[in-house]
Image 1 (cartoon, rainbow, N blue to C red):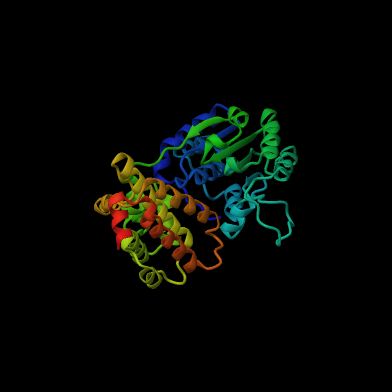
Image 2 (cartoon, one colour; image 1 turned 90 degrees about the vertical axis):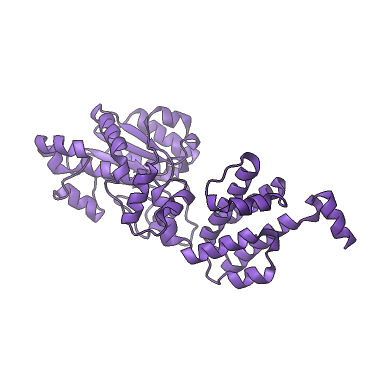
Length: 372
């Protein structure tokens, strides 16, 4: 699993986490928006805790604690780099492990030998926690601490959460639990109560934009806005989502609104259109429309105020909400569409129909249409 080390905006969170661990806190729940590097921070911390030079050299330990880093040269660091440290476990749903392309260090995505023909789980299951609890009773292999990273904590199903709760109530000696959550309110309340909560904040926009520029991301400010201020999501949308040209082409179709014809959208949508990126763009357009209609604000497309104002004269809020519901359903199967082009064309046709529905037109325009 690729990892970004020492992200610049995490200095304050890294310091706070170090202070908690210095007080012998055995379980920390890192929470905050998705796409800001909470898992990377947890893995960085695990590497620092398992660094054998840091543990052996008091002077180095003090210096590395201040900067939150490991030596990168000792046997412990080499084992982590190779993905085989015996005293580190990273627990994630199987679907995330498969999406990464390879297992992260110590990953227990599912029970080893699971049938590859079965559908990958989106939950952390009780079998994973039972195996973890058994492993945690053993003596550590390297004679140092043991670190367990769980991400995302909200994917623990109820039996798994209850099983983990029992482990946290009587934690094994020299064991640190680092839980990561993108939606902390969806984690089990009793589980939260057994952890020290540490909120990881969104980075300042200027710092995030500077980092995106260093990564070679085009239009970093717009990408950051579209990602809700989360730089890793902004970078991911650039690499795995819509190209700038296709983004602008689809946005132009949305801008046309009621004037968009079926022939135009069929010609504009390519055969290999990314469904996930397209649906995300449509959702941001819908959110901007609703925010503008109800509160006069635009978040994602501030340059489209004129188009949204014109659209508000024809598109009822109720119809917009219905279309957004369709998009939310479409997002659930965006990873495996039967026909990407057909799926996106269908969403755009539904968008046009929701605007042109005569049942929601003003009486004068409805009457004029009936007369014609």
